Structure formats: structure tokens, C-alpha cells
Length: 324
Image 1 (cartoon, helix red, strand yellow):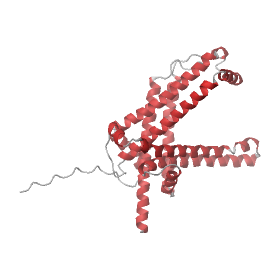
Image 2 (tube, one colour):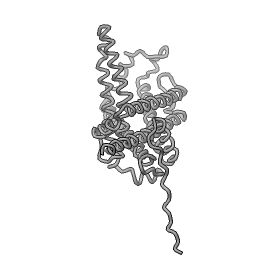
Image 3 (cartoon, rainbow, N blue to C red):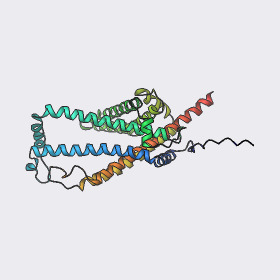
Image 4 (cartoon, one colour):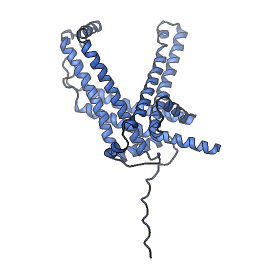
């Protein structure tokens, strides 16, 4: 009697489709913990970038304070603002040719590295999502070898940059009403405040989520980038239910970020200080732990918004099937 053919290994279980925001959040937690060997190094990269930024900023301020002997003007826990500005101008006067290119290069490198890490985290979330149809369990080494190539990151990075520009432009539109708050009549002040409030809600609850969904779309749908990915995200997010889920995501993500950055402020406040020379050390172990938490939160948000994106695509496919 012929031996039975070996059966293929079972496919990884798919998460239940549909559901509300907390189902997406659960998917994000499950995916991140199941692939900890992939996401922990990515969170550590995010933390290393943040730590380097904080340490560089602290050392730069200490160099400025030491050069102008800022402690000599330190009275009653503060320095006069006009005097501080004058000292800063004096410090920059003979050094701007050196400091300006260095500062621009540093900011460009910081932003570019941040966009690359965000794109890599989004690519990892797409590759491991239980709703993507792949649901792969990957290690950091296998992910870097198969998924991360310069061509694969350009689209998500461009999309994240474009979304950031749109987000800041939305903030700028809201700020256009500021003169009316200070110089307008009572009615004008009320109208300007209402306009700013609407602009804030639009930016906070909509534009930010559209940007995050667009980055995931540019990873999951090669060829989409920039404005095309943002337009795709807007179409997927149509409908009151989808917008409500996006608003809840924004609110929960904001609350978690706020809690983590409160921990960061507390960690920095505990650092030993020397007058206005700033902290005696560039950073502490507490601050590094907080930055690791920020990186972990970035991973969780990426995995959650990826589950949301694929559910939006499923709904879009169902609607297209019904029309046919």
C-alpha cells in the first residue's frame, strides 16, 4: 500500500476579520509580541536615534552656555530673555559659517534616519500582519535580508515626508487665524477660535491617521507614494465608522505618547544639573528606557494601523464584489 503523501504545514491562523478599533489594537499587540525578535531591534533603533538626538542637543546647549559663561547671568532661577537672545547672537556671530552647515546636515540626517526607521517598521508590520494574507513570523536578520532594500523604502519615506508636510500645512492654516484672536472684536475672536478648534480636530483626528495609513499603503501596494498614497488612504477611510475608528486610534495613541513623554520629563528632571549648563550628563539610563518605550509604542501603533488598513481594504473588496 502506497504511503500517504506528506501534508503541508497548516497556514498560520488568520485574525478575525472586521471588528472595531480594539480588535485592531489586539492584533497589533499579538503581532508585535509574536515577532519580538523582529520588532525589538527596530524599537531599539528608534530609541538609539532619539537618545542620540537628546544627547547631542544637551551637549550643544552646554557648549553654548560654557562659551558665553551663562552661569554668570543666572539669577533667581532664570536669565532675562533679552539678555539670553543677545548672548546667543553674540555666540553665533563668529561661528555661523561652521555651525549653520553642521546644523542643517545634522537635522537632515536626523529626519532622514527617522523616515527610514518609520518605513522599516511599517514594512515589518505589513509583512507580519495576520490580516495581510502573509502573516509571516520573521526575525530581524531575515527581514533585513528580504524586505529592506533601498528601493523598497523610498516610497514609504516619500509618503511619510509628504504626509508630514500636509500635517504641518494644516497646522499653519489654523495659525492664520491668530491675528484675529488678538486684534479682532468679540465676534471675530469667537469665529477665529472656532476656526482654530476645527483645524486642530481636522489635523489631530484625520490628517495624522491618513498619513499613517498612506505609509502602510505605500508598503503594501508597491508603486504608491506621496500624494497617490495619501489619496488612496482617504478613499479607504470613507464612511462614518472608519472615521470614528481613526479618531479613537488618534486619541489612544496621543494618550499613550503623552504618558510616555511625561515619564521622559520626569527622567530628565532627575538628572543632576549645574546651573544653566544643563544636565551634568547627556542622558541617563531612565531616559534610555523611556526612549525604548517610545520605540515600542511606535511599533504598536504601526501594527495597529496596519490591521486597520487591511480591514479597510477587505471592506472595499466586499463592496466591489457586491456591485459586480
